[in-house]
Amino acid sequence: MDPVDVQYDRIAAGEAQAPREYSAFKRMLARARSEIQKGDVQARLNAVNVSSAIGGHWGMGVLRQAVKDPALVVRKSVLRGVIDAGEPGVTLLRDMVLDEDEAICLPALERLQCLVDPGSTGRLRRLLSSKNPKVRAGAVTLLGHVAGLGLVIAIQRMGNDPDPMVVAAVGPAVDRIEGRLPRDQPKPWWVQPPKADDDWRPAETLPLPAELPQEPEELLALLGRLSVSDQPVALNALQQLSGSLVSHIVRRQVPGGEPDPAIGACIAARLLKNPSWVVTVRRLLGHRNPEVRVAALEALAIIGTPSVVIGVRDLLKDIQPRVRQASLIALSALIPRKELEGYVKGMDADVSDGVRRTLRIVLGEE
Image (cartoon, rainbow, N blue to C red; front, side, top):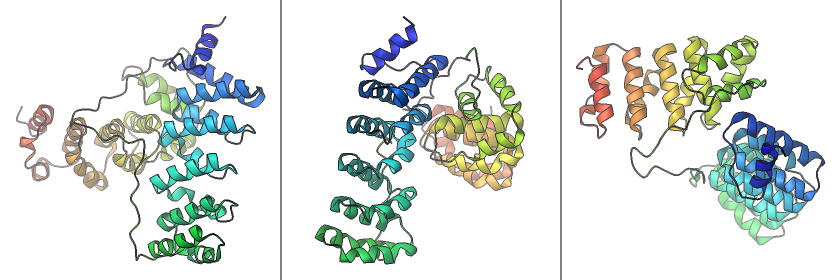
């Protein structure tokens, strides 16, 4: 029997972890996609388990096909996978909040409330007509935190709802939208703040696959995980695509998005020395993943303009020493020595030996 199929079955049964080798998990996802479309309930459950174990944008892309599966048990498994995936699963949560079964809808809504997710506004408005009063009340509450003034009238109409729980949610929601009450701040459930300044370690690099992916998005993500020596190979494949297509893909990267494509976008901008991607890379300075912030700083050291200096300077106070080092190096490439000295005052007392040494190097003292 094919060893990849054997491993697939073991992952589905919870007896093994997802492979890191690119071609193996791509084959597994292809099988999972087929099983979701054509398999029986158990086969679809297995496919969901495997896709959830692989995770990331690859796994979520397959799970999307099972969001409206006719079997509740399958949709529950999808929901668990989506929640466990964290940020890559948010777009699927927005779809699952429309599920007619409260066992799916309410947990999805609870996670979106935790996230204070403005991207769910359109779906929340549809939930105002839900048959379930818990869902209606939850939708009103979350709209109070994320909606604009244009939805005040629609929310005020919910004051005529037959359920007192819904009616009670209307007043605070309107007060939040109109600024009389504060809105909650997002609390992403997948974010675990570092326990110490040096907890973070970069993700391991992937080996260069024998066959590069054909999809440009996957190629960009792969570029973000390759070693420095292998990056030119993937970059060359990217360059074979339409230049406008590559630019479009790169510019789609957002601070809260998948780390691997975001890193790939920064690497492409740096290696191609493409100044037209400055705006995109600058946005990634605020990414929650330190590896992305480092990649963005390294790119801006090459393609940056005066418009990025403030964002780069702000990362001199980043919690991660590696980010502070990258910020120092980028600033030294972007501004004159005299201006740099003004920004780095006090950094000679940084708790990190690496940061202090980088400071001496950029100031020409070592």
